[in-house]
Length: 286
Image (cartoon, rainbow, N blue to C red):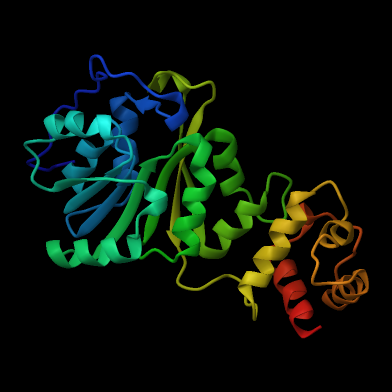
């Protein structure tokens, strides 16, 4: 990594610390994986990194070797003294105690960029499995000012994020992610690389914010509502699934599907982003 701050990482878990299952605390211990995630983030000396859930600080150290500054946001107060001891000699890290879902990143990031004279922000994290989707949706839907999001997630979720919209592996979140970002799978991480070991394997993916969406629609919110509703009952035909929306009659939906050139017997997972965009526009005009 070439930084004068770089040193060998001590990845042994903190003695006496009891991991809490309800917080999804599975801490990464493999040094090669840690370095791989840090490098894949694209952070350099002009970069502010927002780290979600630093845990015991293993990845935080690797990120600080590369980045201009790291702001690590940790929910568990019990980890703060462990982080402060581990990171005490690194002057480009600050630790914020808080819930990432309640953190105003649209205020925090510009403040940190200005304070440290940095030009861009990137987000990195080993996300707890149980709140992966809410975190990603927050980062995307709130238009958080970060050029990329590099995260480790459950393997099944990572495959869904990377899937092409309209493919069998796609889910509702696939469409949202691909609307806002390009997706690059980085590496697979076995369960043995964590303490305690989870029951599933993980993957690291990087989401790079697009300059412009890949499709145009007059009402993106309407498009995403259609996508979410279609996938809530993905075994149903599109017409039947969308009939759950109270603002449209079955006749409205049938006419819009026909105008958009979409067979009403198709299922949501078979539609592309462009298909949903056309359908949203037809319903906007209804």
